[in-house]
Image (cartoon, rainbow, N blue to C red; front, side):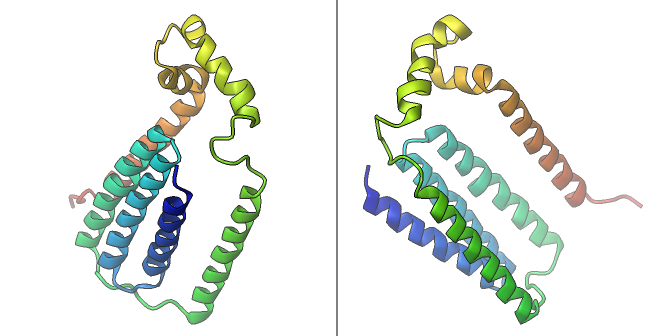
Amino acid sequence: MSVLLVALLLAFLVGLAIFATWTRDLFAAAVALAAYGFVMSLIWAEIGALDVAFTEAVVGAGATTVLFLATLLRTARHASRAPDSLRVLAAAGGLALAAAFGAAALGLAPWADLDSPPSLHVSPRYLERTLEETATPNAVTSVLADYRGYDTLIETTVIVTAGLGCWLLLHPRRA
């Protein structure tokens, strides 16, 4: 795993986020956010979370971009100017959130640390007992569908609800 590659992708991610936040051209912001989703999926893939990478590519870079562009077809391309005080407050809040996430990340185990608690306790149990406990030969499927079934069901419900909400907002109304 290349720490330098992940660092470069994260720096690019920050640049895309800043560009999407500060541009007044909504089409450019939608394209920047699509690129953000794609770069985020590359980061997930690089750190070994392929299931999350696929989801991010489909939802973050794909479906969300389609919804942004469909919304732009029905609205104006340029945003109205927000007050400078609101923009500064939003930037300060974003920086504070980034600092909090950075501080929290310092307490995490290093990547691929075989001595971390998940590597010593949770992962081996899932890998050793998945077939006997779930009758599912694929460990990833058993974790998502059996061990985390309620969580996955709630995630699916949220995505379906969001899709329905977008459809209702974008669907032409008949008078």
